[in-house]
Length: 401
Image (cartoon, rainbow, N blue to C red):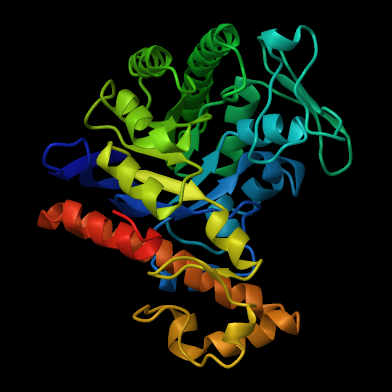
């Protein structure tokens, strides 16, 4: 089979597990973190450095690649993996997050029209709303040049088939925790209907493009913090024939494990589950225990470009004065290129001097930190000591258990 998931070890008393995702471009050992190559590039880092850091797969963004350089260019270049010089498995998201978040003037904070505000809409302060949702799809203006575009479930599938990733996601509507219960229900039904259309178009394109490697389609589950809506979304999409699932939408962080658990309890054991947009250590432990298999997030490189460094004993800013003459590695015991070749003092200097390779070295380390943590989590489940590892890492990183 061109795509399949094989569960291996199970976490005693919890939904967590290890396993293997098989794709046309290689296998992924889970749980796994998937670094984000938004525009077919990890910012400031070459693909070969990501491979050396332990990355098993990369995730690119359909919205950004659609706008620039265009999905047809990526297709002519051999698909997103070949286009960016990466020979391993690839993911692309549907573009829905960016269409709706950037369209509302937000990045991480998403907004939609709400019943509580009548006909008004939640939009970031001093921003123009660039996206409008209807039952058929989303009309939006490009954040690059203001040009008008439209995404429907069919268009998203067509773009992602052109991009050629091994794993793609269905088009969904995102809401926030600010939205009313009534709007969450309406949105969930809209996303369910869009999922059906994605499946139909995916099957049509797969048959029409039979000479291409198979692309696995993951359905995206929404429902905010409502247990009945999350479970309903999981039950509804589990009947549609998806190859796996994306656990998405607005989630209250202190309840992340609980909410993920609602969804995984309703999903098939032999399908992988990808939690979208998560990378903090406590969130990773909570979500793995609740049954999530893979994760992606831009945070490791985003904070690295602003001189924030992950370490076993917490995050710190290397531009602080105390690091000017600190000739120790960024993180004692880390085996990444940065930690084995340069010091905190050198990286402090590079950021102060505004050298471009400051971002490169910091990003390599932060990505390796999260990738290595996922390796440790996977080994701890197979070895039967997940709880002990979680307690130790939470104590060291946050000063708590």
